[in-house]
Length: 492
Image 1 (spheres, one colour):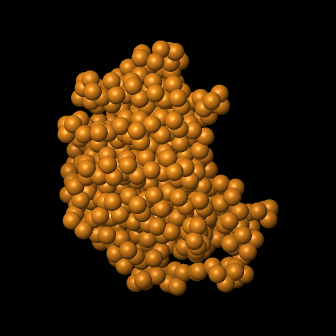
Image 2 (cartoon, helix red, strand yellow):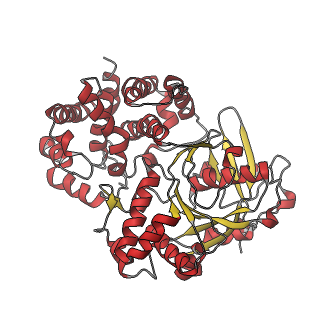
Image 3 (cartoon, helix red, strand yellow):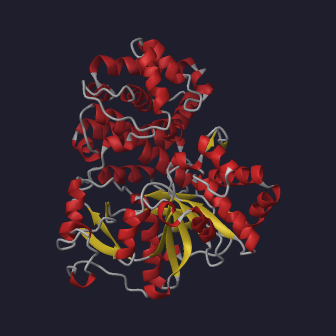
């Protein structure tokens, strides 16, 4: 093994590296987390780590992957399941080893049967997920039975390829063994994530076995959560920061993120849960207001900056915030256009929340790429922008920032930034590229073809001439003067 892949020498780490204070030898896989990407490492597993530090116990986490190779998981095991979390801002950097993970399973290494059997273990009490929006295979609030991978899983439940298929297979095995209730908890950034997870799992199970569906109804809960932490994809610079912080050692599972984090969890667990509130989580009866606040205010403004900022040549969110015009118009989007659409508990100050977000966005240490945030726009726009547009149309109030965001997306998917091409990451990329090729030369036909995508644009909006005219006008504005000037014109 090359030096680059050597396990961490824990005894010779710098004194500044904070190590777990709890007894890791007693940890058992009580949580199985599917999709151990950057966000899961920096948020879900981190909260469990802090809970163990506060109260101890045996709530360990098994992490599971269905795709790719098992190389990173092998390296994690060689590090005794430790990995590095670097929390950094323009003011401070904090480094610690997280230790809540106690096991890994990868389909390429362990086989699908091991993953299914693992979900059926009696000691397991929670299955959690971070698999991105498209991983739930839901369309129009129902299981997407047109999805080729869902069709495969329904016909080959012993060898599922999707997270939903794996969960149902595990629950079927759990029922067969009589191993009791469990909770399935989404930690992805989509509205009503628990509701949608429940829909996907129940409808999939119903198509397989009515008795299994009835058992799930009685024995499985699907709490919703709101998650918030900015965790950019790793860059050469952030990898170098991890290595420098570790005194020259390399941790391939290390991650860099902002210091801020928030987790709001619906307290609905069938078989118990860790005391996450001891780690700062908010356990509530209704997550929805917090979901909407974050999706519209934070994520909605992120998307605004992603499309318009990227096309204006700004590579990161911090670069956007360094431009006073982009910063000012982003605040107006949050305060003037998104805030009126929200209904929050009385102790939530949405103006203060917006100002806090702007400060977080300005963190130049994160290098949060606009191109990264711009991915999967067809799945993000409805909840981030279009529900708010509907509110403003009904109220007759101004929403030009939201409309310009839509126009920015329409230009972004053309994959042309002043002659520079780039990759389009979207589950509908092939269909979008076809529209660009066939209609792109005629602005009106192009915009109309995109608005006709009923999985993206609700037809009640498309049927409102005020909306369609505003989108056509905004698209033309960007085409004529560019995104930077179009954003500046919002101030007029």
